[in-house]
Length: 325
Image (cartoon, rainbow, N blue to C red; front, top):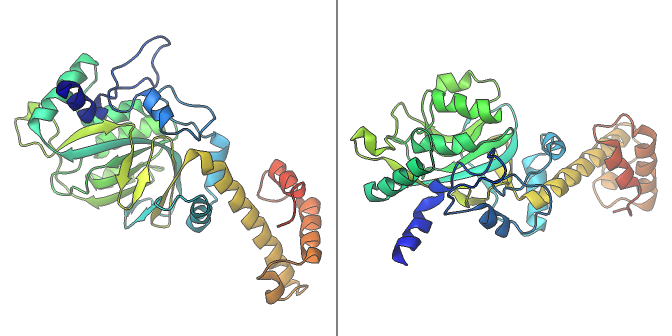
């Protein structure tokens, strides 16, 4: 019993190159969060999933999420009682751009050789390639974001430099949310859309393999399980929204609502600002609950301009068919 418990504790690592990209009928050793575990802990998601069980929020929602502000996402999540989904205080790479993607998660702990040995041996059996810092990278899919808790380790902590960064970028076309240090930051900045949020930069590098014969800095103990990123909790399949120095971890079942709420806010702001410039209404009339007359004017404006607004026409039709606020 003790042996099985230990294997389950250490294992995310062995969570295996997971079933992502594997041929039908094959399986992999996954002892921390298996496909079934991921599904179990994301019960509110009813849509498409990756082979490893992660919710697969549609590309359409990801595209539209890029226009959502952190305040808008925060408001929707708070209303749904998700209170711990935001973290800031990052060092940004390409911080003038917006990071959006689906989370693939990993957890590191301070290095411990006895656990490391078991994990590395299992990695050999699972035919994993390279050191463990490459294992989650091999699992990445297009538009994923690698989200890792590396316990903010700085000196001796960087498990991502320009080589691993290039591999991440080649797999996902995206960046990272990394609660630790990176190295080779000049090389990472050369990747045009490696939009990333990290804790620090350090020129050192981690020792994450017993083959080095050096003191282990850290050991990876989980892939595709829950992770704590500062004050926030992230799950595999969460939609990452990173911008303006902060990162929001959006549960997949709320991603579409976050987008739609944001789009409605943008439309109402466009209309309100237009009418204020025209001096048709006063600030007091716009900056409060709208009267039935203003609501009717807004709906008429939507109908008249639905082919020219920065929101999908189907969403505008949905707003027109809904009850006024």
